[in-house]
Image 1 (cartoon, rainbow, N blue to C red):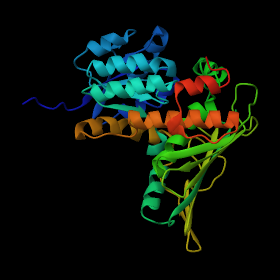
Image 2 (cartoon, rainbow, N blue to C red):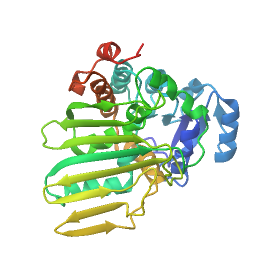
Image 3 (cartoon, one colour):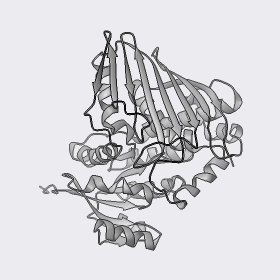
Length: 367
């Protein structure tokens, strides 16, 4: 009988800016260690090798796929590069973790899900918000009936410029192509997090509607989006605004994110995530005429990344799926496309009916 490894060996393909948030999960991780890193940018690769003390590097991801010692492959490249790398890795027998969103088209995402269904390894799409401790606690409270039957969920996103760390310009430039093709960072890219949480809390989406305006051509804000759930009374809304002069305290990105969940006998208020603009506790429960503040819950955004990344090797060992599966990621992609198109053409849409042909026809500027 083959002896199980003490730790699974992981490799990163793509070590750009976002992986500053990935690497801490591998420090002192019980189930996995970062063994190899890969990037086409040799200077960035050398920098990460020094920073992380990972000596094994390559600019050719195929070398990683041929390495029998590698158990997990992380794909952290720009979205349009996901498909080929993910499918190659799955066909090589690796367990694959891919950065969100899964792809830039439904056909690409479906091909990845199909490849995963035939592969021996597991496939997940990384989404840190559903692992963020205040959100995890909020779901526990709802599942325990603390607010009664949920009635509505409202997401608030305020994006700005000031108050966060410096983000390299080249890390953002490739998003412009997506904006030119009708997709925007607020809804399609960063919005993926909120849409993921919306489905994680209450399930499949029945239909969507909304409005999206543009700021400085590329920024898909302000916006007001809404949706209805399958088999549920819950109504969801997503309020987005670009406030360039709003100072948002954050070690990461200047995003003011808040969620309010209203039930028949209580309310849950989540006051921060990536950044914060108030000094309120990260989670407040209102019920029975009283408020209960969760002052000491871990609220650093990094905690969600660490929990999300560490859950994958644990899930592999336990032979279970982890959040999010490829299928859930595909559903979120359709959700995002449906919202964007519904806002453009003014009609209520069903995400389940969205196809690439429909996207090409309806999404302004799409090729």
